[in-house]
Length: 465
Image 1: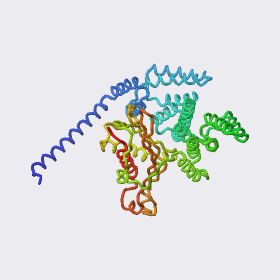
Image 2 (image 1 turned 90 degrees about the horizontal axis):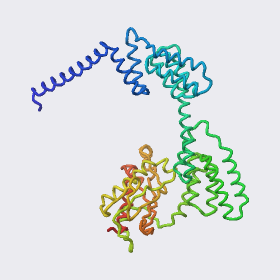
Image 3 (image 1 turned 120 degrees about the vertical axis):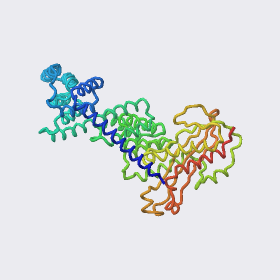
Image 4 (image 1 turned 60 degrees about the vertical axis):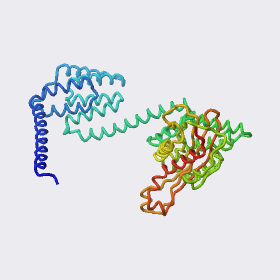
């Protein structure tokens, strides 16, 4: 039990603390009220060090609105405003209007509370095709005159300008991504990024004439093809089209079909994946998903372990004649773009848990995270998440066991970095029990469970130094 005297001390301490805070707040308020001119002077000096501090501009405007009388507009500010008005009236190009706006900016650095300067500066920046700068000035105009007669119209106009800014930012990013892709055509992650960006753009960018020309050439080459080399040429033409217009779903689909014909299933998989990213609601989406799985079976022709558990993995036979290995680098596992869209976080969770479990087992001297550390290792672990499903919490709550099982299927490969020889290669699949999952958290723990299973497999079959 707390002694009565202690309680009194605590109450007194709390009261004293409250009084101290109140006195400090009141003294600060009095300081500002007693000498607002000095406060304004200080704020304006700070603004000159950082003219784009819009929060500080708002603070200045709010302070000035409390001052009676309002501060006089300095002569230098008036001179800059006159120069801006003159430049505006003479302006013929966007560059001319930009120069006029810069004069208003100079006036607003000296008198950053004058509402008309903000309004005129906003109009000038619009003429200069700079919607973001115009938007900021309109917002500060409303801060200075919140009850202006045109406030409603200005707010709606700000919303329109914001849309223009978003579109401009999207277009800038789009141009940059396309330029980057030309430097590295095999950057499939960048292609995915371009496709997702284009899907947000309204209207979507037009397909350039050169891309259509290459696509037409590809169709013609494919229809006339008499040999594998002829078909491969058609694929190359589609790839030229996809370097110019890397968001067109039909080009990806056709390119995938052609690569299948020339027995390059791995490339076909990449293009089918990108087709599904570009057209996720395509009528054939489900069939394409299944087809990708069939192609992956052809690519990854290795032994498959179904229903894997840690106990099963620990009974696997060690690999004879390999190693021993002291250091292991775990490279981020690949996954289709469709899987990354739905399960990006669980896939990252799987990789982190795999590295963590390998370290905790302590079999190898060093476990390297290949996503951030390029240190040399004697063994490299790579792989691909071939397929997975994690039943969501809401589905499990409402559907129980009827919501089905969660599962993962992963291709894993361990390669000797000194010789390039593949030491171990398996497809490992595991799943939970739908009835058990209805009463446990095994859906959400699936990535970690799978990581521990693969860790157990590697630590069991790979000889360590």
